[in-house]
Length: 259
Length: 271
Image (cartoon, rainbow over all chains, first blue to last red; front, side):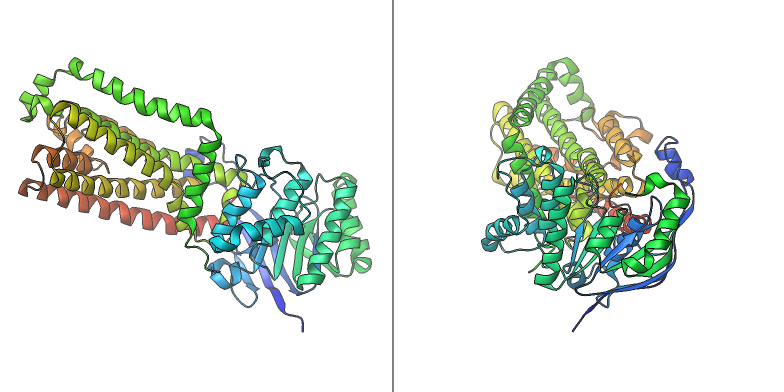
């Protein structure tokens, strides 16, 4: 039976601009203006689903993912991940979310990939006796063949992505959140990534929520697509059903946005 | 899997692995650990130890310990406040902090674990240095002196870490270096008795210096060795230490709570 993983109801996220204190502390460099990133967003995601959030720059894709990950609280509305508020830092829910960020710098650059995974395994509370075995198994699962003694700053973009996925799988997640992770990957590595995600969903029964600007990715990888336009859901359904809406939005914002 | 309780061990091993690999950094730390105290000790004859003794009522022989304990206090404070602040900011910029938070380790445990390696190293190095100074000047201290001094060192270090957490959380919230840590360093260097005894400073400056997290630690350590162990004269210093630790504890708690709320609102665990 499918498990309800993410429920968002009427989620609105409004950012305030720079405050006087933050402007003073940054010597005027903080020039953020107030803006609304998400407007009344509602959707659900169940296990074994791969839902793509398709939208251009500033559409609110990352904000939505951050709200689902509990890394950001919405201004209005309700976010439930596996029935709980993800921002509550409850151990049960956190442990079941795998996070693959868009930043490929989220590892310690002075450690090797293997050492980075050992570090995160410790933070995940993996017992010492199981740690090394688990890390090696995860590296094999994601097909990371980089030498163990190579430090992360010398990794290719593809290897970093694999490392990131290995870290996300460490807590045996029921939900994987991925934020524009295939940007900068060549087509061959991108195809390998699609296969990997599909295999993970089939093998572990996890649900995946990923943000993308790539129509091909939305078409071939996602079982459902949520089209975001300036913070609101413009369309929600299978790719064939939302393609025309997404095309129109991307045309309006300039063709160069489309990947 | 029991998560969240292993942050201390994880960050300890992380720092150890980095230092083991980066021999340049290791050498530079070792050189500064050797050279700075030597320079501090060489400066002793230049600063009129006799005048120091006349004005503070201490003995001339206690001047080297005065200098070395001041040096140790500054190093501990530097490891606990600006180093932690800069490290946390770097981890925020790179997304490393966000990845740590997603492991369900609470933010306060992550922040608390970050400076432990550096602070512990400074504390161990400083203790050895003070022992060496005492051995060279007035002979090895009695065990009770050493125990009392260690108590003050640990309490003062914990207070410095609390200030460091508050400063780091301000940095995290505003995504910019916060001035709190710099002010604390400035006050400590000029008015807390690191080099110039507080008794020699004008009253307003001496009062300001007494608010530094290292002020009671310095008083306690110096008196512990001067009195050779426990003495009722240490009681006001203990009260001072407890009051300062309480204030900085409240400050750290309030700041971490406020910063977490702000970071969750902004979604700024990563830049």
